[in-house]
Image 1 (tube, helix red, strand yellow):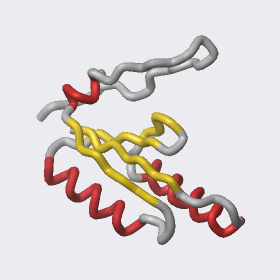
Image 2 (cartoon, one colour):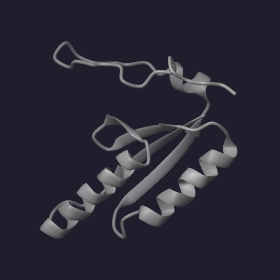
Image 3 (cartoon, one colour):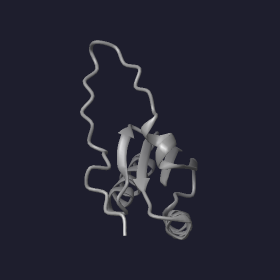
Length: 102
């Protein structure tokens, strides 16, 4: 199962920019991988792990802005279609090659 995280945070003032940087840093520490500038993904092993990850997100969420989480199955996630132009390079950094199923 994957958690898809979407966020839109204000970055107009230096304080808001700092909040944005801190939130992004915490996401990376929590194991989220950036797909786009405000779209992150995290692999979780089951529903309990997903709930725990969402609870941790609630604790680190900024006061302002919008943060949304979408749970998708691994089958749905790997069926994602990349539509890019010639100028955009895409290196796949998120793969299940090292996924260990216990």
